[in-house]
Length: 135
Image (tube, rainbow, N blue to C red; front, side, top):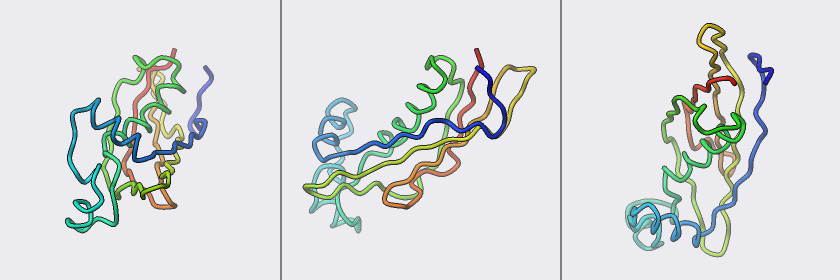
């Protein structure tokens, strides 16, 4: 794999439905009603039901793991949550993920990747960075 600073990862687009949120809630055990019930979400000031933050983070992490060719090459990954992914009834929310190599450490055989994660034109994750071991 020839990777230099500036290398762009393939972009990915994910669509999330309310059914996806129910499935994720069951699998993760996170049944917080802001992810499942519109009335509850609105009662706490949200515009509608929102996707789980860890689901959004996981989608972005998948882009890095797929690009690395082996998930075990992703040595670290972290982010900050800045805006919710709103999932309106009867519609899919769209999450777009892209990434760019921003640093290379030849001695360690690693690169740092900054991710851009948006939904509806709004950045939903910031400081999303992964360290990847090169093959």
